[in-house]
Length: 217
Image (cartoon, rainbow, N blue to C red; front, side, top):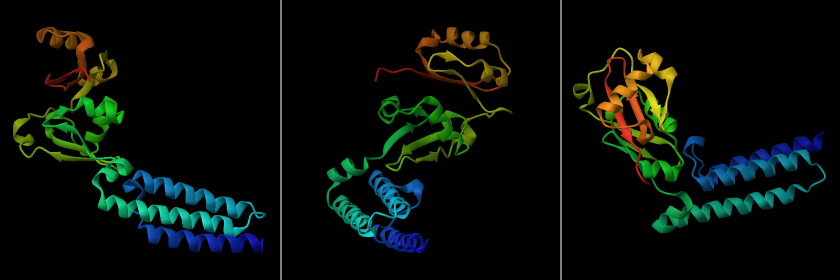
């Protein structure tokens, strides 16, 4: 029991010290290297506390090595932009002027639902409202709302629903919008389109729609 208490106290002090030295941010702001080092330190700490037969020095040495590597990476990132892109990646524009960057979606392995969820998280339901959406190296999506959106868009009582996603008609969202499947086909026919060419179609209860066609990416 005394051994467990001693190990816990030692590892707690060491991990707090390591986090201070490495300058850890909020979890949502972690770079890939930050997250890896934190996971490794966490595992090393739990192992030495649970496995009483292992010398504490083993974990201490490993944590100190991780600290040194993390500090080295952070310093080198500041000196080399190319290394920074390799170690941390780079920001990517996901939406610009209401248009989804499908190449970026593919590179980031984002789905249409991921894009819509990010927009809704910023109270954006009409795609035209998104002036710029950027995926940061931490994975967070920062969005700048079009300042003219409030005057350019006539908003309905209910927000637009994704009634067509990746060529599939989503009946449950059609019902929320107050329309049937024939409404979708009518709009597509009007635009000389078929569902298989549509990446995303948004439709509100007033019948206003926005269609994003699939691109070759």
